[in-house]
Image (tube, rainbow, N blue to C red; front, side, top):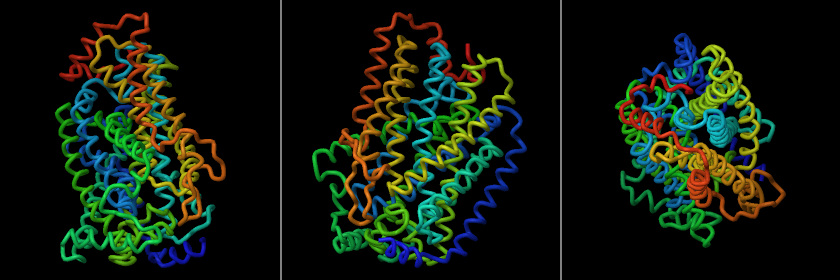
Length: 550
């Protein structure tokens, strides 16, 4: 098996050319980060880019944040191998923005200063709610980071032709070190500028590949789909890629798994801390709304491109070659680039994907570190009695620790060969379970109390993570006949008892139920005056700049 991978990897471009193009992308982003660092003079600059990013710029940056390695590498691979079922990932990711636009974007921008906890703790007891929100933010960010780091490691090992586990681990370490550097030096402003450029390059790169693929089939989508099905029929494991059921639908359990996945994708975006934090970088609620509209258009167009890229990979590269390459299913888009334009296009597309990963992990890291520094250190430990300088210093230390943990988990995920779109879906499940019910109750239920918030956050978080730990994701998955390995994070053991890969169908309703139950069983009287103030602020934005612990 290793011989097959090595032989395949040896044909994928010229490592020297790939490294050179990588180097150019990294150099450009480092220069941007250094320039942005000159304006980081306050906590608002470090956390929220001084709140002076325009709606259009922020829409592009949100698209940059959201169009992660999962969107580019994971979804393209899922479509290439599983066809219709793989495309449903992108439908879920896109529809989720309507929930974010209609329910949370404008209201959160008006209510908070820097983090999600500013909203959740506004009319509750500060300490316990901020601690719970910070813990939830850290867990969601780590799940998301896990996917991005695995994607980066798989991409670089594919381009450099390395197959040993030590070499793959080294690439994850390098990506993690760059990520930490971006956050320490550039803050949110530097991260935003990197995301602006990266989103532009990613959409242009996807457009070029889409036109190129369609051109090979006379700009006839039916011919492309037919070629993809012909290729799937000739694979070692034939699949129907033009109809549902290649990945989900073979059994009752897999159908239920798909419903669970869909719930996680559609409801998770509105609870993702790194997406919510982007709303605080714009000057007004109107800009927050405008940025989401821009993001929806850009993301929607990109997912249409991903449909062509995915089926193009299936038709021109083939599922067997994709699954045998380093990175497995995540290698589809780079392999297609090499098939279309040789080493040059491969290097450019891989460089764009690499920049994609760097920008996203930087955004995730700054969100997690800001949550710890602002919510736990400044608000809970120091009771608000700390300077912005010391708060930012703690955020930078937290970024280093979070980066180190993400590197370790990323190495595990890379070696297990998990699809990164699937890993991101787990992050969405945690966000939808722990964060979204509490956010909605806080914004729209006058009687909501501190106990309800804590039961909802901790209940959803613990239930979701526990079910993931005891699911086939962590142990007990069947061995993939193509790679000879199980797709579980931990190989060779089986302690799974929860049959679904995504727990959202259980954990999301449970979190809503616990939030309601905790409130009803609480003896605490809800702060009606604070709710009235929150309602006015969320609808008008009056006082948002002063959303500090009361």
